[in-house]
Each structure stands twice: as structure tokens, then as C-alpha cells.
Image 1 (spheres, each protein chain N blue to C red):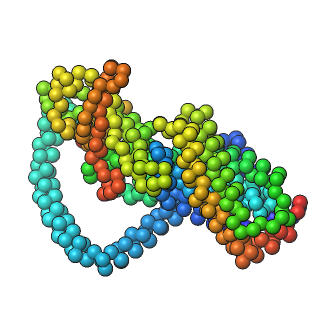
Image 2: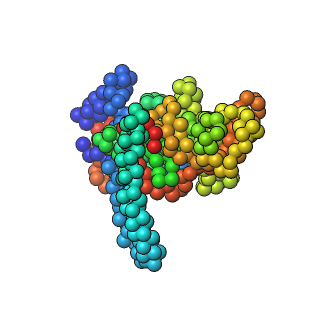
Length: 286
Length: 175
């Protein structure tokens, strides 16, 4: 047996022992994402760079118009920030005088998606380009400007795996935004996956979300306003309360007759979610 | 060790392609083209047993690490598939081009079955999952995965011949 064969056998036996005994399970579990992350990040950098160089040739007018709109929006947001600063100070004084906790102490971390679906594609997941090094922890909420996007499930050195709210395995406690004289209504939101038109289609559309276990009397004794807002309730997971999830489109009593179930149109367009943020160190209410 | 570097580069490229390229939807499920098993299949077909089994373990580690599968399930299945292939193969028989198509398709379906079974025993099947639906999804994905296996076979054998790794290993294959 030559030296090369001995080295291969040694590596094989070592890997097998480490896997069988579970001593290096943490290392092996995070090895793949850390191994692949530099390439995914590099690919994203190349694609973005190519888009920036090529798109002006085809979309010059659109880019100029978008630039003007963005400048107007920035000016409006700067004015809002000035007004909100005084409101925020007043709010803080009132909360202190009433001994209420801080409204929100989340630290938004800007992230970019690197890839979708992982290595299998069964779960609706997104790999993002920030991880433990940026203070992200499992359970942190990921939000787009329009609302809740997903929840961080696994965290590695410089990347994280996010499960989307459209995943059928996702369960989030939510509540309806109702007028003050209505009783509070909570339910469990879960995704309904996506559907293709036929067996050979390569396009899939996200199904509406579902809100289960709501009070059965809702809608009968308390008519629902059209397009009632659905927000996170803050119960259970580390997701702050008050993050927009979507709007209740309709509701009906489920087949058991015990609860009411509703369909929720998500606030976020998952095809083009826009800028994404992880709410690190989150708690309280938005 | 040139062959080690080639295997590492092939696994890295396969991981990148498998995670970046979109999945193939079928009903409620979506299945990605299996590039990592395609690389492992090359080593099952053409290389000594110690490289084949190593490729099986490491490809499995990468598949599990990049998904929500329980750790070790892919390595276990690929290792078992490697043992079966090693017992049945004849290293002296010629391997025509595109002869990796059928094994690539079969490996994808076998992996899909064992992933489903493993998730069932671990109590972690995705919501709304059915075995029939999964079988149909993997059959659909087996076609592009078979093509990936054939392309990986041609690319790796060409690379190893160009770099001289294949000649080195042919001399050292006999134990």
C-alpha cells in the first residue's frame, strides 16, 4: 500500500470516527455553509457588478426616473425623521412616567440573500450574508420594509439560514388589528407553501398564508372590517409584537366547528421583497 | 496531493451550484438538481475505494450542512450506495460517455427515498408531505440530476487526465 492510499484511508477513518462519535458534529454542521459562503458571496458580488454595468445601456431612462423618485422619498423621510424625533422623546417621557417597558430594542442588521432553498429545496429557506459575527441568533425575525419575511433558523460564522413565513412548517402567533371596542383576536399563522400549475411547470406561486385557531364568533358577532391587518402578537418566539404580516382576506368556521380559520394575503412580495433586515437583540413591541 | 485538491474543488463547485440554482417545483415540493451526489458518483465509478468512500462521506456532510436534514443521513446513504457500487463495479470495463446518466438518475431517486424515510423516523417531515408526491418530485428531478452526473463524470475525468492525477492514482490503486 503506497503513501497516498494510506493518507486517504487515514482521512476516511478519521472522518468516520468523528461522525460516528458526534465529537465534531458542530464543526461538520457548520462546515458546509462556511465552506460555500465565500463562493456565494463572490457570485452575488459578480452578478451585482454585471447588473450595474449592463443595465444602464438598456434602462437609462428608468434609472433616471427612479433616481428622482428616490431623492424625493429620501427628502420626505428626512423630514419625517425630524418630526418623529420629538414624538419619540415625548413617547419616552410618557412611558417612563407610566413605568412601561421600552417600546422596542431591536437592532436592525441589513442583510442580502445569497441563495434559496439550501441543498435540497424542500424547505422554503433563504441563506443570508450575515451570521454570528453580526450578532444574529436563531429565532431572530427577518423583516422587509413591507413586513415579516422569515425567521432565522441556523446561524453560522458569516451566514445564516432563514425560514420564510410561507413555509408550510412555519408557525407564528399573530393577532388581528381591530378597533378598540373589539375583543383581542389571536391565531396561529402558517404558510401554505407554493403550487405549480402542472407537473412540468418550472414556475411556482406562493399560496396565501393561513391563520388558524381564531375565535369562532368572530365575523358573526363582530363583523370584520375589510382587509383587516394581521400583525405578530409577540407571544412565544423572539419576534417583536406589531410587525405587519399581511391582511385577512376572508375567514370561515373550520370543519371541526371549534375555531375560525382565515386566509391572509402576505404584506411582503416574496418575488421582490426589497431590502431585508434582521432584528437582532429584539424584544418588546414595534 | 493533486487528487485531494481536485475532489475538494469539485465538491466546492457542486455545493455552490446546488445551493444557488433554483429547485424544480412539482406540486407542493421543490427538489434541487443533485450536483453533490453527481460528484460522489464519479468517484464510485472510476476511483479506488478509499477515495469513493471519502467522497461519499464529505458529499453527505455538505448536503446535510446546507439543508435542514438531520446530520449524517446523507453521508450514511451515500456511503451505503458507494459500498454497493464498489462491490458491483469492474474497474477494467470501459466507461462510455454518458454512461453516468442512468446511475445518476437512480442515485437521485434512492437518496430521495432515504431522505424521506430518515425525516419520517426523525419526526421532521415537511408539512403536507406525501411519499407519492415526493417520489414524483424526485423522478422529475432525476432527469436533470442524471445530466449533471454525466457532465460531472466527463469534467472530472478530463480534469484528472489533464493534471496527471488519474495516471498517479491508477498506479497506486492496487492495495
